[in-house]
Length: 170
Image (cartoon, rainbow, N blue to C red):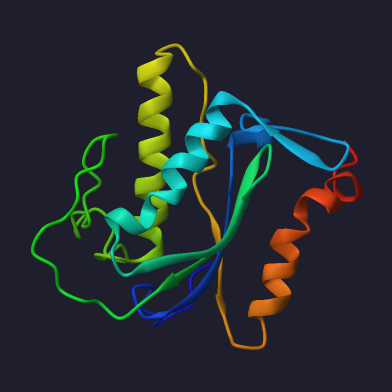
């Protein structure tokens, strides 16, 4: 649920969590406290790390790609105008979405950033395997971090692999 009246392109730190559809373990597996990425996991990691190349006012503070979800802290910095946007080897990552499609998605928002990441990963997977059933859950969770939250959330992300077995009792 988005905070009413909040501009999600405002400078700040955002804790983001999003997952694969039906929590399928597309990105890899965890064995003995270590994550082993699949080809899709490696691809997702590569594209995730490219986000600041396409959204110049972002920094990836910390993140973890788990077998079925991704946690990240993304910092949005004040916008610095640039004339040339880098093109992605995965296809253009437009920085704006038609405002008539979703008026809350304005240039440089967390929603646009995550949407473009998900689209890029899905597009690359389908290029490599047109019959893939890979899919994302349609939404994502976000939390605007306050200064007192940042270290606690970093620790949560950094310890996610070690805590995997404790949480996943399926």
